[in-house]
Image (cartoon, rainbow, N blue to C red; front, top):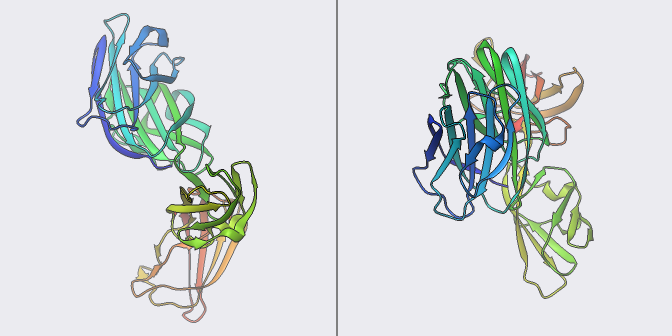
Length: 368
């Protein structure tokens, strides 16, 4: 699945508000809208733009926030919302994302916090590659140090969106695990905070972690006999087929070294033409790093050994024969075979016997 953020716009007013896109939506775009009120309310008091579907709301913190969505038919350019009282401050946001396939019904979680400097929404069940969309709200003015963890990108900037004595932030990221928790951190403690976190999936792209077993849905009417991934024959990794579900062992993705979207081409024993399926393969590991000791670069090493330890101090990986280039850069290290996920931190120890040097550092795993 592939979601690409195109635009986020905001609007505010008394009793009603409108957010207008700079460019109208294209067919199949995902539109995600939010509504915020200073007071606690029920969704029944809100009239939202026709055609948008209500996802979920947090109402118990005396600060109302809600999320809506729509799969665009093309030409949509605005989102409006109004409050039945007509005298209360209201704000809206509208975000537009391109996507490849049809949308799966989104899931959501809500959260509240009181007298705290942060609020965490989750965990939420999701899939690697899904779009995670969050709205966070807190009493008081904006906080310059307000931020999201788990790679979230704020789409309303550091100052957020002011809504009568409170501030709203919306943001998003791509899920890199099957369960996610996202935290919004402030520089000061606030009395009331609320959040809604939503997971959006589409059907266009199967998402696989390198080395994992996988089930792929096909539209072919017969039994799949051959398969290629990124033009490499992977037919010997087919382990079975039940109906239209084709199962593969972990060797399906063995030749993939970089995270990305690749074509899986299936051929069956019927007269159907070959089917091409876009597959997102996630390679998890340590990103490229520059080896240093005492401020100096460790360049042109050819005999580096690496030991990696997880958060519990357990040795999870040992490698030999790593190298650094003339700038001291170590190439990304594929650790997809570990149980750790992107975002997990490893303690890494590097040693070169020939050069008599050793360094230890902590590094978060990423999609490489």
